[in-house]
Length: 140
Image 1 (cartoon, rainbow, N blue to C red):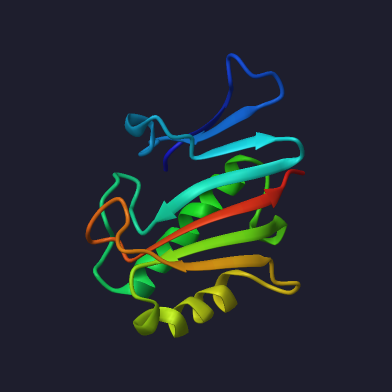
Image 2: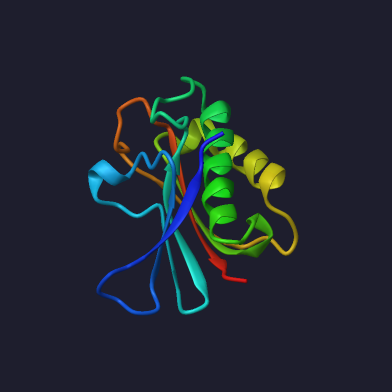
């Protein structure tokens, strides 16, 4: 199992960088999450495994992995999906996948459902990615 770490940002007091090991975002100079001001801001998570490889071509498998990655980062920050207050979901084909997005929300989130923004985008960081999920959660 991979280990995880919390890193205090060097130049900004009160801001913690949340990282998991391996940190597949480090080469891109992106924090997996930032904990500050009582909130945890999780960067967009895609359907990639711990080595940064896309898990499958199908939307639901990628979506489940994206939410699992969000859970992993939140856990490292001392939170869970129950602490999420805002979700941003980015998809590449709204017409084909809106029903799947609703199913993923039901599978991973619960009442009271967090505020949500759902956007269709022309592409994500990798051409095979079909979904990316970012969240803001309460820090406990």
